[in-house]
Image (cartoon, rainbow over all chains, first blue to last red; front, side, top):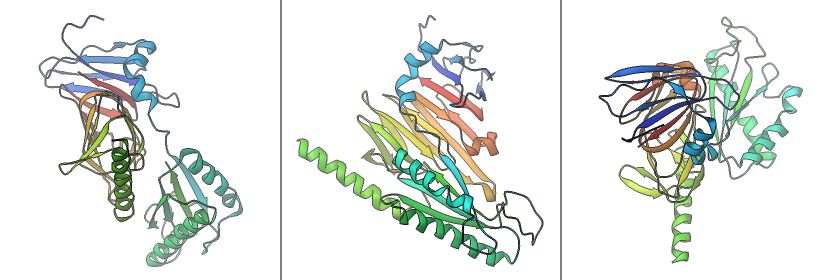
Length: 184
Length: 148
């Protein structure tokens, strides 16, 4: 690849899980789409159209981007915990998830994790906001009780506003009575 | 000389921790890993970047010839940078319930890896990576960018 003038490059790489996305690179002179892995386009300046996508050797990708790739953080893990009706008690299978959450926090040395409370639509909106807040607070104290310290646990609640399973109003649905924990 | 550097670093960590608890709602991301001489500029003030520091909208991140950094954002987007690189977080909004979504990052120079998160999944048109020569639109993706 000859390069007399410096050119910027944009490469579409496979996701960590192997999936391949799609990008568009545009400027006033032109636009290209890339949807195949390890393809790149080179752009000289705003007056020159991005080059026709071509394949780049993975070895070359490593040479160019190795340092940035090596320091890429792990993708955050999302855990979902479920509750008994009208309660801040976790279902047994969710109690079993807690050690896995703790392990993930320890493995990653997490500095900030998020705990988001949700409810189903059974009952009043304000009540559901309250109970989802209490559920999120319960999960936080459970984690603190298990020894999660020095980590900022950011707690929020969405009440019935963010249903996992879309239901009508006043529907008792255990898949919506949940707390989501995001470990970074 | 060595003692001075250690003191400066612990001062930065201290202020980052305090800011963490006070600004829990305004942070948009966090520094997960950092190497070499890497800085974070916020409102004109430049501080040494440290693991655990929060990222806010408007932040400018710069690495020197030995530097590198890895960032995680609230919506699971990952940005990592190699040496001699500079990225500005021009806009970040992740409020899916209100359908307020936006991620605009400006890549001024260097090598940057971008792994998209929920904002790109929910609203691809809300994500823009701006290079000096072109703008990148993404749709659930892993993009490597080198600006010379």
